[in-house]
Image (cartoon, rainbow over all chains, first blue to last red):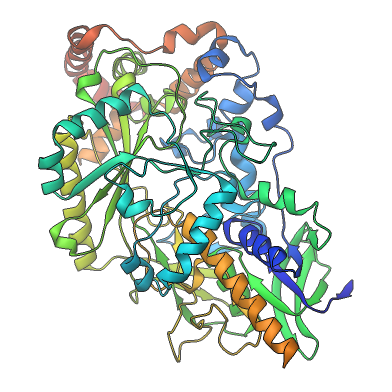
Length: 542
Length: 69
């Protein structure tokens, strides 16, 4: 058992999008930080990946099988889905989760992480600002967040096109680098959009290049370089061009007021006379250690932050809400590209990002991210086709340069059918179901998006529903302003009933827009950290 | 019913596994390169694939039903 007491020190749990930015903010405001994190990282696979384009690797690297496919994947081939999630070099992101963060649900597949950098270790890097109305619905103050969006953008590097039609809805921040180059496939789609702009805008659709947290130019940070367009962004580090929260943690390690406690599985906290004590199991073992600080910021992702709060406040058997964007993906064929040669040079992230504003949603947005398909291997496509392998492979090769996957996210609000509950056995359980009205809205969203896709020359082949939780966007488990609800948070992010424990991630949100939430999580984490620092200063001066 | 039929027609796990191993063999990368023969050329390829799929459909359904029972 280890006891360390610090005065005026902030404790932070989690090194992901929220934890890293909260730590950055607290250090900038002059406070000491102890960041507790389990911190799994990839120790083997990343070093195998050559610094070369996908096409060059395919024709030359004898070791490519070790990082392009996974032995476990091949053993359970029925479970492989088309999509970028967890390529072999990213498998470490969910390592140990089943054992250490037990979660059960028949209706919701939660992806949790104990990785250094959390889920940003494998995210798609979409970097979108929420509009003012979306922020207010989520329980966040637009005036406060705008400043923090700019601060985060300056640190992590965001590339985007403020002049594109989608920017007014999703890129309201300064410090933006020029947009990444889009590939041949995306250029053809965007040109068609521009030729038909009026009709598409009337249909409620605005398209542009996707804002992403990836560098198009050299940054001030000499450890990162611009994206090389190798189409390996879902496998390797791409010269660290795509931002991962662990890069912030690595920089903070050089700071004398920052301490990183790795291998720490945080289980609960307790407030006392001397501050907040956090209990953790080193390496997830049976021993328990603890550390005490003046305030605690929980940034372990909405699901795990809820787990820690429910455990600490003895709220077993009590249901708390759960928000998660419903998600579908639509494989389609960009007909004008059929049979055309595509340039090899590309990045793997979303090429284009569309905002859909249908009348049936009133003011709410639905989003559509456009991906080309090259580096995710053909066998995953052939597997899904009702064809023998030789025919499936021929069809896949004939469609490859025109094949486009459109990822559609829908907004989410709380209902009684979306919940988490901590059992007495320590297992977190969850349920997620859509009511009839939500199902109707989503069906209308998809019909509208497919109409837009046809107008763009990209008829849909099918629509795939990968199941609830597959968006990996989670929020609202400790919602702000939900008075009389257990574990609710106040507008500042402080957990009700505590003096100095804050939810720095998306657990306090009361609404989840369709846009990817990570950039907003980062900005909000800085806001919450700043609030915690202000509260601490006030208490010290009182 | 449609889903079950599609399931019968999908390739077996073993054949997909073999395909994945071939795809990551640098000696075989040309077998997986995109075909870019223009819209007419590629359209013909897809039409031929569709025709072959339809002609062989009864046999594949039977084999799929026997194999996956």
